Each structure stands twice: as C-alpha cells, then as structure tokens.
Image (cartoon, rainbow, N blue to C red):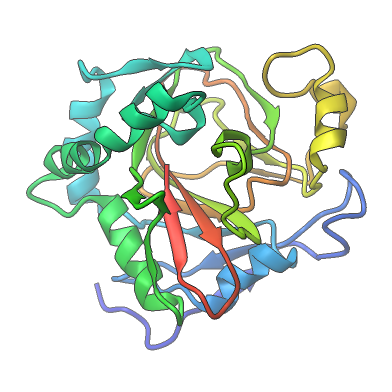
Length: 287
C-alpha cells in the first residue's frame, strides 16, 4: 500500500476546555493509516498541553503480524494475575506492581527477558513495542529511550488482558505512586500508548473524561475503594472510543479514563507509558 506524502490529521469533535469539567468534549486526532505510521511532535504535545484527548493511529500493527500473535496470546500459559487487581491478567511485570525493594528488584531483573519474550511472540515480524519505540525516537526531536531507574533500565510492552464482564473502573495513572521514597525524576507529564491486539465484539470501549484531578482530589474521589473511582461521582465521559485490533492510541493517563466491560472476547493490549521532561529532553518509556 502506498503511503501518502504527508500525514493527514482530522479533528472529529470541537475542543472547548479539557480542564473545565467532565461534560466538555475534547478532540481526538486521527492519523491517517500509513506505512510506517506518521506521527508528529505536535501530536504528542497536543496531549501534554490538553488540546487533544487522544491521538489515534489506525492499523499500526499490520494484519499479517497481528493474526498469528493474537492466536498465541488468547490462551497464553504465561498469563498471570496483576498484583494490585487480580481480576486482570498480564504477561510481564508492571511498574505499578512495585511496592517494596523486593518487587522493585524483580521488576528490573525481568525487564530485558520480558521485552525479548514479546519479540518472540511476534516473530518473524517486529514486536509492535519495538516499532513504537523507534517511531517515538524518530518523531521526538530529542529522541526517546527506555526509562532508567537508579542506573537500571525499565521493562516496556506489557501484555494486558481484560476478560468478559470485568470493568476497568475510572482511574488515573501516576508514576510517582511507585517511585522509591525521595526519588525525583523531574517528570513534567506522563502519556500512555496502547496497542490493541484483540477487541471484543461488544463492550471494551475506552472512556475519556478529560479532567485531571490532583492526588488529594483523586483520593477523595476514591472514597473507601482500594482502586479506581465510582463512575457515579464524575458523570458521563467526554468521549467514548472503540479501537479496532491493530490500532495504536495515545492519551494522557493522568486524566480520568476507564474501559467498559468486555461482552464476549477478552480485550488484549500492549501497554506503554511515556515520560515527558520538556522538549529539550528525550522521552522515556516503561510499562
């Protein structure tokens, strides 16, 4: 398929104010399918400055690479329960599971092996996580690389499973919640990049509220819950997105987001976080 000479961007909803309330609508930037995908630094900055709710890249994973990997992943024996939310499964060990020195050591110890495992699952095609890392390195003027934590590199490319009738409650993600005490990374913003491998026929939609509560407000929204917040406390989302298998979606996870329960098949994604430290510094990636 011939790629167009320039990236086409389409705004499919008016933008008012991403911080003004849960009922406002923000834009979603759609990057026309190209090979390779064409992303701009301005697309990334639009998520950071709040002028877009998401950047959607359809068909990021080619069909010929997606189909055999999806067959392997549906019932893969290496699936394990996420430590802090056992109703979810994953292949790989997430940084959000780090809570003490032992779990931190385990995270870094398995990082390279975890990256290699996903490469093997997609062989002879390139791992989508590797393609994403290269795309960001080429797109961002200062480059991109794996996050370094106390001289050790992070894992990236966790495979996550959301099974039938499991609700991913509204929540936000923040790296600082799992950092060592007194550790500062000068992080200015955090983005997430999700690559969709399997999407249920019913359910599994991504909900975006466009509001970014501080940690104190977020704690109050959680109430007595151990994880996430009650949908009734925040009203309807600003946008609802149903990605297709093979799509890439970037968003700001410090803004409230959720995933509706899967109605039939499991929702399988590759999850990545992107750290922003200013335009003069490289992006950093981890899972």
